[in-house]
Image (cartoon, rainbow, N blue to C red; front, side):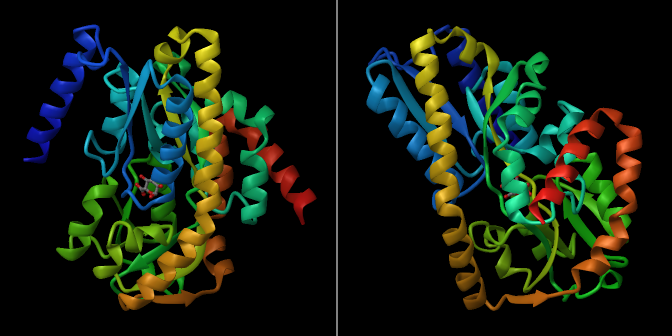
Length: 334
Ligand code: GCU
């Protein structure tokens, strides 16, 4: 059924493009479609509403921004492909899922890359460093216009994960990312890649024993109903990217392009401003759902996967300069 619905969505979206008229036939406005995988209370959606408001209050006579939440236009990799072909204009994509489009995005999947959220934010705010990453997928027909905070990723499962040993023999969901598969194997668990929207049912039906994500997955995606133990082992800080079809961006007249670029900044700010409160709120709600938050010995988890740093850098030498710059910044952050 989902596949069928997806095909309908694709055909509908493609029809707009083929007809050369992505605008509504009635208003004559160009409809700009933005897809994401979160609910309407999630900071990503709040950020995108700010994007919509910013563009429409300036160019509302020409553009109608439409936001599609909850993966309704397609899950993770599918949504990226829709942006790539221009069937839709923007989507929010985790860097985990962008890895297969350009392997520079592997950098964010390296576990324990950042030593604090401050360190992570300072790197993401470094435009000079990010420029090459944002434009790395130009050849694939899309580029990142801003980043969105997606917090710190931790394990959560149907049984408590207190030490790396507790992961032995467990099936844990990862994003569709080769580096994340590698990481999960290094942790000693068995990696089960699947899209975000499939995780709830997979846990409920015991296809997997758990997953890893920020706290909002427990509430916005209701995973706390089926997984009651959340462990603060802090293995990754993986950002989301707002990506756009490159031709759409390039075809905009300069003054309109500027409005869209500013809107991306506005989106970043609104999303990030609501992030910490959203995490606190998610924790409260999750506790009410019976989720237990466990403090664990982070060092034990870190030691398990630290050898991956060398391994990944050897396999993909182009990560080296970024990795070194990130390490340098870590020193200055201590
Ligand atoms: C986070 C992130 C999403 C991503 C998801 C996942 O929620 O914000 O972009 O898709 O994790 O694990 O798939």
